[in-house]
Structures are given as C-alpha cells and as structure tokens.
Length: 111
Image (tube, rainbow, N blue to C red; front, side, top):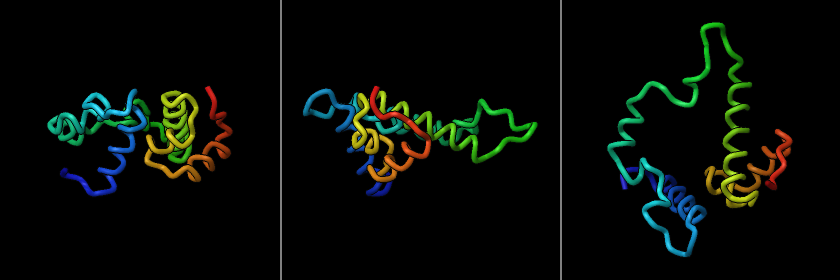
C-alpha cells in the first residue's frame, strides 16, 4: 500500500461500514483505491471541492469550510442510516469529534 498505516486503517474501516455483508469486496473500496491511476489523475487536477466557489469577489474561508463539513457529515449520516459511529469511521473522525460537530452545526443524526 503506497500510503501510511493510518490511511490504510481508514480505508479498511470505511470498507467495513459500506459492506452489505460480512465480506469486504472491491466495490466497498473508493475508486482511487481500486484504480491507482485514478488517484494520480485526481491529484493532478487543480479542481476539487472548491471548484464551484467563485472566489473572484472574495469568500469567507471559514463559512465555506463549515458548509463543506456540514455536507460531508450529512452525507455520511445518510449513508449509514444515521448511525453516528459508522459515520465517524467513514469520515475518518473519532465519535467524540463527530458528536461535537453535530452539536455545533445542529445536525440531527437520524434520517
């Protein structure tokens, strides 16, 4: 594995959460893990999560980070049916950090 141990741990934990059964399949892995050339291509692209944001008039960095975090947290909760510890694993966070963010952003964990 080309990354560090923590990255590998996060990949495995995410796959466990996504797996529909007790078996982890290739489909449980992110595309970048299944296809290393895709990971390199994405690294080479200048566009990322901020591509939609028009910064020519200026932006509030912290507001944009907040919006991004809220979106990621909601998506993880939807993916896990509101299961907070699974959502935390998907996001690479510990449960305490996710719980703190849920309170800060006033996000309801159950969908």
